Amino acid sequence: MKRFISVFFVLLSGIVIVPQSVLVAQQPPQEIPFESVANFLKLPPGMNFGENAGVAVDLVTTDGFLLPNRVLEERGLLARKGFPESYDVRRLLRFVADLKAGAPEVSAPVYSHLIYDILPGEAQLIRQPDILILEGLNVLEGGGRRPEDESRPFVSDYFDFSIYVDSAEQFIKQWFLLRFRRLRQTAFRDPQSYFRKYAQLSEAEAEAFAGRVWEEINGANLRENILPTRERAHLILEKAADHRVERVRLIRERVTGGAGDGAFSWVADRGLALTGAGGEENGPGSVTGAPRNGM
Image (cartoon, rainbow, N blue to C red):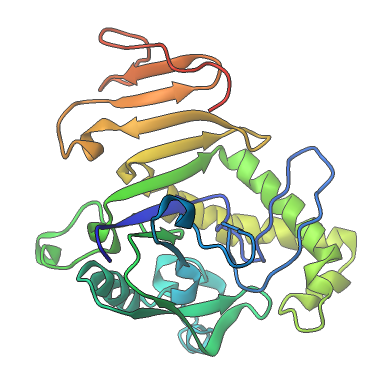
């Protein structure tokens, strides 16, 4: 890769154990074709992301680096899928290290949301892009190191810029439940779907099951492993209940390599503010004047 690896950390699209789709809260769910291989950057056939600007951009999701279901079952981790211990971290580290070192070609495993597992024999080939977007849940881990871990690399050590898409837990839970209801009527009915059995549940059984999944798996993973990494991102996008980005925070010390004691933040309908070390907005040293309507 010519210059750098960019990580796009998408919290909202990845904390579910079911296929990903997008639903707007409190509105009828839109029709979205189900695809077994996740790709949140959908482009017209024959077009590559960034090619109009003359920049080669590739997207890789960390789903492909989940351990196969067979291995998770052997280790008693199938119910912990999506938690840090369910990933092949060594393979992911080797992947980003080889890219950063300029290897002419590297490969990433391919994950299917239809069968809920790695596709045997399938690989995504990456050939020295200008920018790599790595999307995943736990990629920003690596904050505090114990003395004995000083020489141990973390995936985030290889990132040049990171984005964390955030929202209140109540909204994320609501989107998960809406998504689960919708998928019971669509993708779960596919004969090949790993989740086909959930399409046969009664409404009451399905609601109870989804609630347990949230509390025991997705919500727990969010609180224990994902949310604590938020402040390690360079840029934090905060989404409202309707999926509208209502606040943008640029962590200044991460962008400047340690200089500064605050973060630039943009709030919908309020402008740009400099948040100081104490967290106050529009306080001493703050600046305003960003566009007030839309991004």
